[in-house]
Image (cartoon, rainbow, N blue to C red; front, side):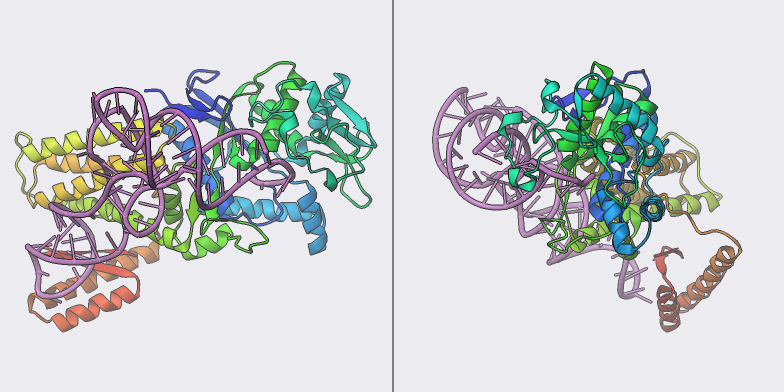
Length: 485
RNA sequence: GGCGGCGUAGCCAAGUGGUAAGGCAGAGGUCUGCAAAACCUCCAUCGUCGGUUCAAUUCCGACCGCCGCCUCCA
């Protein structure tokens, strides 16, 4: 079945037909590196990580480009505050961004071009736009003349003359029309700058995305994404530049926009002082809890973030991790057993396999339908319930068929969750881990013996002591199992 | 003023023209030395008012409420 996705340009769900069959060329607007990213930024990057991963899961070869905006006003201002060069500041936060993405489990882009390394290419595009008469020079600035691009406003669905005019902002206008936007900004004294035919300056914000996306993915690439708040003016302008420059459209086949994240139902803003950095969140919560929270809401809907909602997501995630643990434990247990007759599959086993197949079908169908992660996770949760239920009925000496079915269910559970980037935390390894492993096992053997003698006080002491070390002990028929919290 | 979105149980959240997934929380039960995990059961007529229809939460209209964008913003 084909993937259908909501296209901001057409305002409906369109079937994904890529430029080249089996391949997806995708560009997502990356960070402006002037600060640590906040949880809202994280949602956008996570949403596109889900989309990218699922397309790969669905068999596409995905090329994913994401820019780094390492020169703009915010960077310059912030550098001034911190008393360092803009370049140093940008590098500091660019590295921090990469760390954050790694900590979140967001897969790195295939290509991560930086604005400052593509100034020459941008100058070529700007020059061509001036030559074509769609851009004009004004006191060292270069502006795109919106009136020369007939379909301006098509993406964001707004007419040029119906906008609220914020004229008081800049009365000494260098622009012919307030809607015109800068392709090149003349440098003020002390600002970082590059040479250009129009004097020293730096590229306008929108320029880099048009230039670099086309440079690496080619005109008419498949998917361009970003936060919903980038539709206007950023993406509208990108499109205008690119199509005016190429002389034809489309710049992009599908536009995808990720919904905003609010904190306690309010927009994050400096004035409200409710900006929450990803680092703060990750210091309190597991990365997969953050992923679960984002997966629970469709990517285009607004998401209200709070510590409570995160705690809920963590609890929901635990249900899945418990199930995974239950299945793994059962497999290990049955593998150790010698008995077990082979024979025709039982009723329960056949039903179990049917359920597994249905789960995968439903999961894919939901994801194919505009990446409906919330519904897809619903299917996973149903599978969790049915698996636990099946597990409760399989007791000891299971058949080869049952063992195989359990292994398949584990593979499916991990596969579906993995398609959305869950369960990628590295497992502890090494000498010390093996030693700890053995010690815990030894203690639990002692505890088992104590329980057999009804020495519950000792048994409880061992369990509590281990709990303090983060080892959760659970008793099962005739034995025990444990795991790290 | 222009454009767009949203309003589903205590909370979060899918979804459909034919009486509503899933998760969290809660209640009861089973299992257990206790616990944990798990299973079972219970818990909503979908903002309000009209209209279309055999039938609407789902389509249309009005209204109320909330929010976003129109200026930098993921």
